[in-house]
Length: 86
Image (cartoon, rainbow, N blue to C red):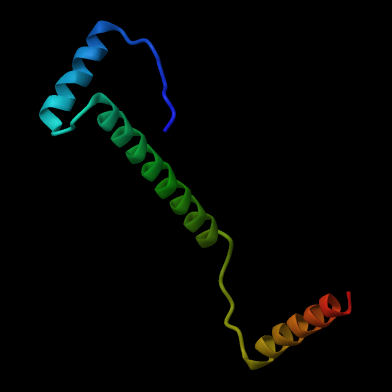
């Protein structure tokens, strides 16, 4: 695990120490790791939501029929054959 050193104003340090004590964290490091994990989750969730919105806004989905599926299967087969041929 890497070590990170940084400076904080005294008021922030006191706040962090209080959060460690009240939040059931064993150390300041545990508390800070928890904050980072939560931020990572929040950003990942936001990215998924953005992708979903883009999908919803991309237009009306069209149903695929048997002919569409056959065309895709044929294209996949052609690509596999080209890959095998080198």
